[in-house]
Amino acid sequence: MRIDEEKGYKIGWVEVAALVSILLVVLASKASAARVKDMATLEGVSEQQLVGYGLVVGLAGTGDGPNTQFTVQSVANMLQKMGIVVNPNDLRLRNVAAVMVTASLPAFVKPGKKIDVAISSLGDARSLEGGTLLMTPLQASDGEYYAQAQGSVNLGGLSARSGRNSFKKGHPVSGNLANGAVVHKEIESTNLKTGTLRWTLSDPDFTSSVAMANAINQIFPNSAIAEDASTVLVNVPESMRNDYMSFIARAESAEFDPNTNARVVLNEKTGTVVSGANVQISEIAVSHGSITVQVANTQTAIPPPLLGPAMLTNNQQLNVQEPRTETRVIPTINNAGQLAQALNSLGVSPLDIISIFQAIKKAGALHAELVIM
Image (cartoon, rainbow, N blue to C red; front, side, top):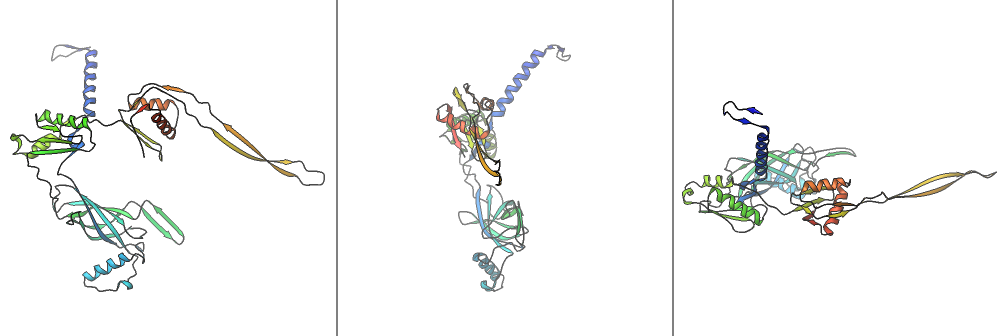
């Protein structure tokens, strides 16, 4: 216990512990909350997918082969536009590869800004290492061109070949260009100054939709209403219609507790088990074991007769091992932490846990959605 000289009263360890407990509760409640901007998107504000066809040049003999006719034709057309007329049948190209270029153009990106692009080989090229993408227009689904890409290709892999020996690491026929495209046209977004805004939840849920509307109403009373499981309608107050940006900024910073369905995700290929916080399992008895069968083949020598050679005989031994399994009663489980602790107590591997989960679901004791990847 100590005395606060400025305030003039005593502060004990009990009071300090109580204050710490209250602080932890507040922090825990804040940690579970999410902002509107992280859980929903504003209707009319979305990114645009772009795609284009281009050529990568400067490859060290790892480009498309002669059987990829569209690459040869593309090079011939490009040279013709530059005033060089060639016969496509006379071209032998191994330093050029045809690629598809893709990008995502976010909303409100102004002309002159740069965005990242990804490229992928379209023909039979072995590697795009050391290549340079030539000027490639990128268009959207409406047929309009929004950006133009060009630059050196950055790969996440490499490949090499010498005679019959070859080496390959990663995926050398796809790569990216950081800031490789220049935006020429802005996406036409929906007019937001209409008096009514809509936010769409990324994971539709009735409880989350109502909670998000209530969170916005705490900042702007009687302005939001949940239309359905994924949409929240917000009416902009008259006092804020001269400053829509401030209204959107304050509304999307509102915090609420999102609610999701109880779900357990299993990946049988990697043995990964991911469980949500709301997973519940009723009391159930679980026993798990496996039988190991081992066949051993040994040879023994038979003593030779008086005038004959020694003979060998094969002896097969069959060994069946069934480990002793223990049946354990798992009590009612209300969260993912208890679930992990209970399954670890059984001493089983992740692959065995997947089988146990499937059996518990079949038994009707798992009160959650089971997703198998």
